[in-house]
Length: 300
Ligand SMILES: NC(=O)c1ccc[n+]([C@@H]2O[C@H](COP(=O)([O-])OP(=O)(O)OC[C@H]3O[C@@H](n4cnc5c(N)ncnc54)[C@H](OP(=O)(O)O)[C@@H]3O)[C@@H](O)[C@H]2O)c1
Image (cartoon, rainbow, N blue to C red; front, side, top):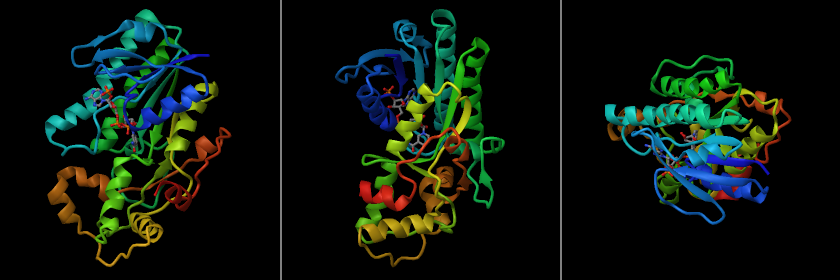
């Protein structure tokens, strides 16, 4: 079976994906900043800032799934944090590119995580698809630079995929925990206008889409990884409350309060547009979770 090298394999998506890859008998290795260990997995190390990588990780793999990057919602977006968010993605991609060029130019595909943040932190009626341009804001520019770094692999004749993922819903996801916690405490409320869309996807579908990207040689370029159902923040919040059988009695949390608490990062919670999954569906991909209600009932 092909050997898959996963960067950021210790993270939320990586953890689930690795289990699925192993269940499908792929051989899996992980490139990490630390000396971790997971059963049945070879761990290699790198230090992106210093430009150091264990070349054995790259030499021996057939596919690279690149998911490493500083978490965008973990800390306030100071100038320093913004640089870390960008550099951890672009410099790591460049380091992989240089290493592949030298040691493994026959790599079968470079599959890079990306995000619907490509389309920017904006609320509009437009349904974004893969041919739309990157938005000129921090999220848009960051994702664009990340994808441009991945596209360099095309010059080596390597298939490149950029999977523009929405909010990943999983049992252990921070995003879901942050949404459900106040509701469980009876103080839940929609955020800002509540009209912002929240493109979401269940973790099982994320993993299946990544594995499809390995298998389907015809898949190329950018794909949106979002469920086909579009839902805004108000209806999302209402649905969580009704599944948890909790009341929603508070008015929406005002935008200014979120800006005070989170600074510019509040844009993550206050804005969002609809994103199309048509291109992925057209490859024959079938979602296990098409409706948010199905996903939440499974996860909560
Ligand atoms: N989860 C979502 O809802 C979502 C949505 C859209 C896009 N994405 C993207 O998909 C990728 C995976 O998401 P995730 O939720 O699994 O991420 P995550 O849980 O935050 O894990 C990312 C991994 O990246 C590595 N990492 C963290 N900071 C780093 C840094 N400064 N430099 C280099 N590596 C660093 C870590 O691995 P080591 O400690 O092993 O090095 C970490 O486990 C990310 O790039 C994310 O932006 C996620």
